[in-house]
Image (cartoon, rainbow, N blue to C red; front, side, top):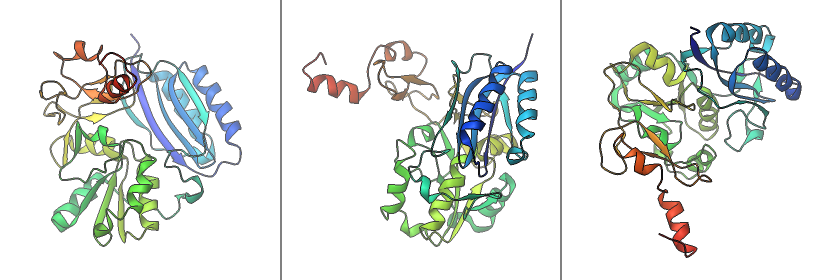
Length: 302
C-alpha cells in the first residue's frame, strides 16, 4: 500500500515571470498526481501538497532543480491520501496576504530587512538567558492559537493576515519595541514578512523561528515552550507532536478540552468553531453567531 505524505515549503526569491512558474508548477503537480495549494508571486513560491512519498520525492527533486528554489526547506508530515480536495496553483501579488506587496522587498537572499533566524534550540537558549524579557509573538490568525501556542506568547486579535499591519501601526505593541521579539508561525513563511514589517516599524531586536512551529515541534514536541496542538490548513485541521500533547482549545458548547474545528452550518460561511466529539453533530447543522445575527436582522428564523 502506498504511503501518503504532505510537504510544506516556501522560497522567497525574485521571479521575473511568475505566470511561467505557475504553469510549470501546475504541470509538475499534475504529472505526479498531487493535490493541495501552490501560490506563486514575483516574490517566490509557497506550497502545501499531498501525495504518495514517491510522487512527492519526484516533485521536490524537480522543483529544487530550478535555481531560485534550490535550497528550499521542505517539511514532511503524515498524510491520508485525501488531505486536499483538489490542486490549486495561482499567481498572487503576495505569497502571504498582508496587503502590502509594495512594502516587501526580496533579493537572492530572501526577504530584505527581516528578523534574525533562530533555530528551535536557539529560541530556547534565548529564553533561558533572558527570561521574561523575551516576547514570543504569534504571527498566525487568532483562531489558530486557540488550540496551541508558545507559553506566554502574545497573540494579536486578528482574524486575517491582512489585519496585522493595522495592528502594528495602532501603537498597541510600541512598548515591545526595545525588547527581544521572536515571531513564529506554522512553517515560517508568514514570519519572513511579519518580522520585516516589525523591523521597518522600529522594533529594535526582532527574530523569527526558523522553520516555524513545525520544526520546533519536530525537535521538542510538547516538552519545552510549545503547548497544545498545531492548526494545519488541510483536511486534518490539527496535528499533535507527541502523545503528551494536551490541546488548549475548549468546546464552544460544553467547555470540554478539544482541538477539533467544525465549519459553520451555513455553506457560504468559512467561520470555524471548536467542538468536542459529543457536540460536533449538533454543531454541523448550527450556524455561527455572525450568521445567526444576520438571519435575525433579516427577519429570518433565529
